[in-house]
Image (cartoon, rainbow, N blue to C red):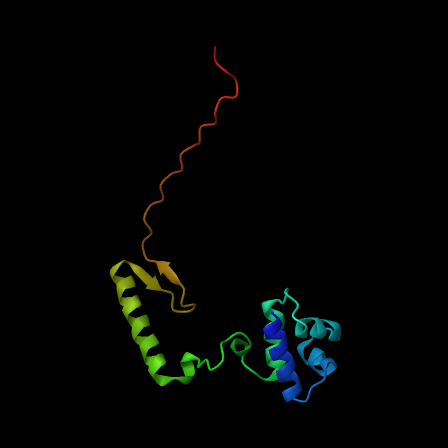
Length: 129
């Protein structure tokens, strides 16, 4: 996490913010900002998101490798992702899986019946004579 802390410190300084300013914008304590910049290993994802928002950068930029281009910024990648999604959706339909319109989460049109669980036999602790 030291690399992440150094990146946050660099972004904070590039934006002309003090630790106190960043803490206030991200709704965390100034002490916590210092801990994160020194490489605290227990950074929660929502804290990282709030810090990214306070710095005006997309949250993925804190974790992405140098030179990363998100798919939404590259039309070729976006088309390829769209084609892959369509192919996966088609395969899913052929298997009876549909995508829920509201959430995009897969749901089974017809679920196969569940197999009942077998009761486990416990070894008899008493020795039989």
